[in-house]
Image (cartoon, rainbow, N blue to C red):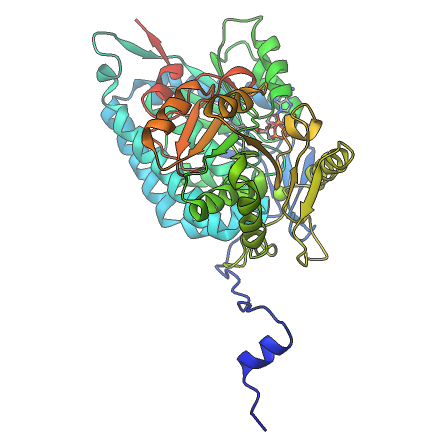
Length: 491
Ligand code: NAP
Ligand code: MG
């Protein structure tokens, strides 16, 4: 009788090849509770209140974070004002650069620790926090450090002056990266900062505070006040804050714009999106499938610029969908700390419910629904990637930002139709175009109302490249030389 090999056993049982678990085991320390970081020290909140921060992959409590109120925010603004008037604000650009380079290097040295913390607190796969978030976090400090002593060259012939104390409010999808891309340009231009991370993901911002201590950044240069929406509102309301930089949902953005509009605060808004990913029939189809997967399933679809609306040329629709399904079956959903995991945990139970609700609405809207049939962990917040086809352009699922691993697919016949469909949204954050013809990519890109347009790739970021939206995706740019201008007064 023929001996049964492992391979033949797998074939006979129709088993799929599987990797062994490879959990990231770097030891990290997490305190039971954290206060605010004000004036260079961790301090207890005025209210004495704390909130639980949950690991979304296990449902277990990770630590408690302080709930900030107007008194805490006022203390932070006083510390930031002192630093602006007496220490940080008095430094030359060359001196500021030295601090920022030092911070960037410490981030690199501690990047494994930071990646593990980011994954535990937010649920994103370790390979993303390790290979995408952390290198970019360090890059934003390096890049902006390079501008600190070159303020005279940002707008030649003009004198640029810092604004003073900047209030910065960030969301939960890229916690440390959002903190870095807000704090680094503000400091490079000589401002001081009061930052509020999202209540779901404050851990790495607080670890960044420890890095600021390690780098001996003058006390009060960066202050971090944790808490929920009221804490953010207290920052927006504070009369001594000169500028608000907000990244988050369009609804909260509108609230903040209304509130700040009553004052002379400068404002930048990085808001939601429903970005179009256009694939022409002449594109390299396997790469485009990979791009589509990366565009929407990267970080569980918790990406403001996620390619959540795939628009494929009609002639390749069937082939594209078949290849996409085959690729989606290979996606590993599970323990975010496992190095083989592609899709980690949905950031919170609220977000998971929101995704499920929108998918249920989508199912009633007349299109077809397909979800990959893979086993999900039984505890924690997990959701299998899925897509809708043949739904109407006016359906809720085609128009609403889901912020989860949910794709809608529609078709086009001509480049003009592709542009019209792509622009048929209240948002305008990003877009992707796939074609082997550069001229076609350029002419389509010229018609798209989106702040970032990727050609034959998707979700690529760089500190030197400006990022921001059109329409309800916000205003102002972050990153690059453009990202420095909201942090200065031009004289
Ligand atoms: P969110 O609910 O708008 O919250 C963003 C931040 O604002 C959080 O820190 C939040 O605090 C705070 N906040 C809530 N209410 C506030 C108020 N009345 N005044 C001041 N601050 C307030 O957004 P999210 O759910 O965290 O993040 C997801 C959204 O962010 C998506 O729409 C996504 O598209 C967008 N986003 C955009 C970009 C971009 O660059 N365009 C990048 C990333 C994410 P708490 O959460 O602690 O209550
Ligand atoms: Mg958490």
